[in-house]
Amino acid sequence: MEQKIEKLIAWLRERVQEAGMNGAIVGISGGIDSAVVAHLIKRAFPNNSLGLIMPCKSNPKDKEHALKVVESCGIDYYVIDLTETHRVLFGEIEKQLKEKGQWNGQAARLGDANTRARLRMTTLYAVANNYGYLVVGTDNAAEWHTGYFTKYGDGGVDLVPLVHFTKGEVREMARILGVPEEIITKAPSAGLWEGQTDENEMGTTYDMIDKYLKGEPIPERDREIIERLHERSHHKRQLAIAPPKF
View (cartoon, rainbow, N blue to C red):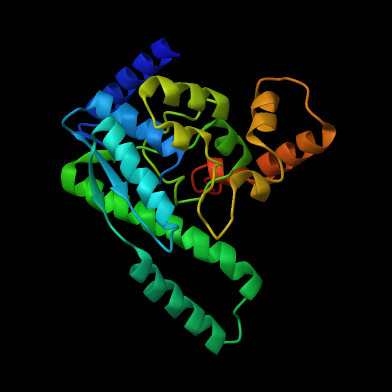
């Protein structure tokens, strides 16, 4: 794993140089994946890396954990609170749809969460443009395969260094890099709503997805869930689809 980390660091440097950019930026959520990426880009670009902490209707604990990530790797950072921005934007959407009698309250929770993810990505690119940095994503192999990310949100990035690593491998990497243990062991959550966890939302566990990706046997129920998630999210792993040239 130490050799893989060194290869990832070299790959990040190559991609940034190839793009003619100056460094790299990542959104730091307080979770393990963004913590690992923060450590990687800090090692790759000691003087040209940046983390953004972007609370948006978030649990205050997430910010505490994000600051611990910053402290553990020494990366430069900004805290940009998007709560009010989200309130204004999503509030206006809700108002307009309700006036037309088109508001779908059941779908609103997911729309609210996805809007937060897209606001964060908009913010990352605005700051990245200022510095001439590439935006580095945090999706691991399990999230990428199942589509557990927001299209044009946390999935809208320039580089995805963890996309071939299982959740278990990301944990191993985190310990080598020096990510705080409480971040490594806490239940993975996108912080979408109170009590939300990734595994409850997906209906299976990262351990099961990791085994599936490695070709190991898993219960039929979990296999069906994983394959259904993969098929349903196919569009997320593609660029915008165009018709054939007529």
